[in-house]
Length: 88
Image 1 (cartoon, rainbow, N blue to C red):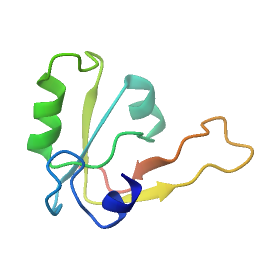
Image 2: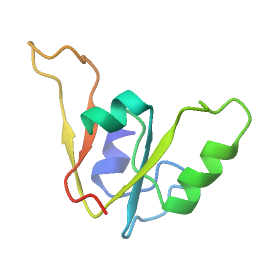
Image 3: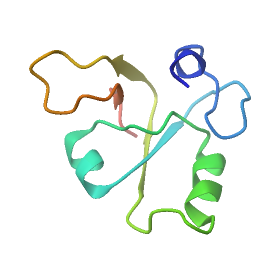
Image 4: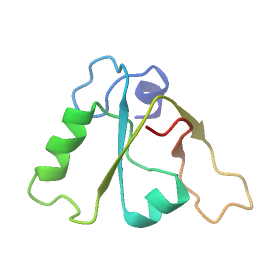
């Protein structure tokens, strides 16, 4: 997942990402601007949000770019995450 994201590959369809880049996240992830699901095309994120079993609280955020963050020892969130840097 991480390698694909860093190569700008969609986490939904595995095709190359352009702009905008979409992230799905819980309200908490949106508030922190830190997402655990990989970046996707907007259409792929919308489709994932409609699938049975999808988290009904997921929100869609679009961006032109993102940073991959590996957790530091002192981080409360111990999972790697994606942080959008140019919200649209």
